[in-house]
Each structure stands twice: as C-alpha cells, then as structure tokens.
Length: 298
Image 1 (cartoon, rainbow, N blue to C red):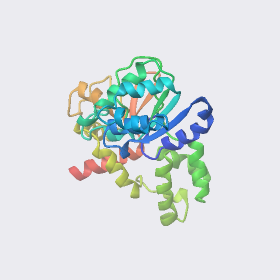
Image 2 (cartoon, helix red, strand yellow; image 1 turned 60 degrees about the vertical axis):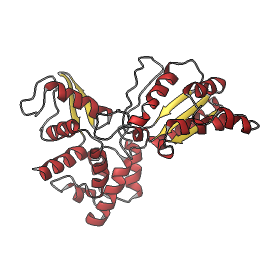
Image 3 (cartoon, rainbow, N blue to C red; image 1 turned 180 degrees about the horizontal axis):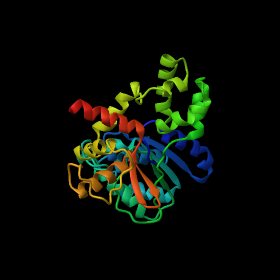
C-alpha cells in the first residue's frame, strides 16, 4: 500500500482489520521505526507466535543470531497470519533512486521475496511512501497506490466549518486529496481568510505554509536525478510526453525515463492515459515546491 505521508495508509489498514480479522489466527503490526535490524523484528514476531510454555526454548532457539527467514516462514505455514509492516520507507536510502535498500537492510528484500514465493497460508501487508524493489513476477503480489480520499476530505473541511462549499473540490484537488495536507491548509484558511475557501483560492500562487517542512523531508530523500526531473516537469506548461526527447532536459533521454519511473514509485509523478498515449505530471503542491526550490538555487 503506497502513498505520500498523510494520505491515509495506516487509517485504511486499521479500517481493513475488523473486516478480515476472522480470517486469520494472528494479526501482527510492526513499525519499522521500532527495530534497528530485520533480525530484531523477526525475533519479536517469532517470540510472539511461540507457545507460551517454551520461554526457555525461545532463548535457545530464537536468539537474534539464529532468527532466520526460514524460521519465520515456518510459523507462517503453521498459523494463518497477517503481518503488517508500517513505515517501510525507513529501510531505503536517501539520495538514491526509489527502493534502494540501506546497506544494513538489504536482507528485507530477500525476506519479501521468500514470503512472496514460498508456500504458506499467511499474508504480508507493506505500508510505505516508497515502492520496494522486489523481483517477484507472480500473481500473489499486488500494489495499491493511494491518491486521495474525496469523501474523507469533504468531511474534514465540513468539520473545520470552512465556507464556499462549491469550491471545496478545487481545494481538494490542489492539495492532492491528502487529509493531512488539507488539515494543515485549513488552519491557514481559518487564520488568514476567516474560513473562506474562495478568498484563499483567489491567491495567484499556491500557498504551502506549514506544508514546507513536510515537503522538504520528502525532497531530502530524492536523488539528484529525481530532483532535476521534478524541476524540469515543474517548468512545463502541460503534461509531459516522455516518448519525445526533450531539448531542455539537462540529462539523457534514458535518465529522464529512469527519473520518472523512480518518482512514480514514490507517488510523486502521476501517469495520465490519453488517446495519444501516456503522459506524466506532478501534483500542484509538488510542482509549486519544486519551483520554489529551483528559484532559491538560481
């Protein structure tokens, strides 16, 4: 399950659990942030699934040094489990293309591949801002990219008592249907425009305000190539046709494709299907922040 920060991945997963809990023996949620290594997280899961009367056996058999992928797979065969790994992007390196594992976390990729290709009765749900690189190619693996929740955003604006309901959809689209981003912008609309969405939208430029630190953290994870691609797209007046070699892009056509693919894995670039073919664009918020960064560098 992929999506930018604040889009609602964890909320959606929490809503899913009550609907499917009867189909599993165990549902285990682990936040990647809480574990320094894969082995420590595997130990935590294996100890949880071990029989309660085997505490001495746990210490002997399931120490971090002995906690292997095979031991976890064996428990996934024995019990029907739903494993949920949250904040998966924390195992990926900043400054590299999307899905590049940190040197001490490359074993996660091996585990994911083994879970995807081994015979067992369990499921793994990954929540991430960044798509992992897993060599799979089987129909048991699926990706859901979350692009926003229209109804949830409308409810949020209603709860904040914003006016000009006929302009809400425009506001929601400008901020990518992201509940967190809209909640932050709603503060600005209340503070600066007396809750008037129409007055807020009359501004000639897209206001970012307290979104800037969030966007800064997102951009800090990007490689230099990805930044160059965003800067280039931000300066285009229309959607981008990558089948045409752009004269004003500072790198090769192959680099453009590589950067687009990586940004798509980060949910920062969107593909638009039209009769003429596939075109690419970025959200207005990302475009505005990219222009701001580019102006500061010039």
